[in-house]
Image (cartoon, rainbow, N blue to C red; front, side):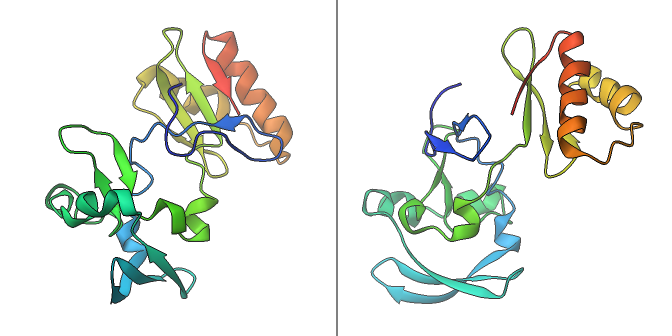
Length: 174
């Protein structure tokens, strides 16, 4: 995996998370975060509609020009107000990364990462037990072999998912 903004972030009991800077996490976060107040000098009060909490954030000094470019909202109108793509690239950035709210600091975009034999992302298990995949084979395996299993214990369910997918040639990273 290539390293990104969150290189080296580690959750207890999990592998080190290397952000791919794809931007999927923030492309709809404007539905959650809104700017409640512009304090000037690139400082803002951000309101979280889910928690009703407010945070003060500041645009990182090296990202002022990136923040000033609002063209991303033409393509992604629900994006976080501080989310941007690097010009001429699909690489995504949080322009308030250094002062981002705790909900953003704690976010991991997958519980399990499913990797194909060629090393490409084939899918992700998100949240508790939700599959996000555009690979029809992974989707079929999940629907036929994993989804019907009613295992209440998360650790045993994880082990079963890993076993089922690795038997079919995939690598699963936790």
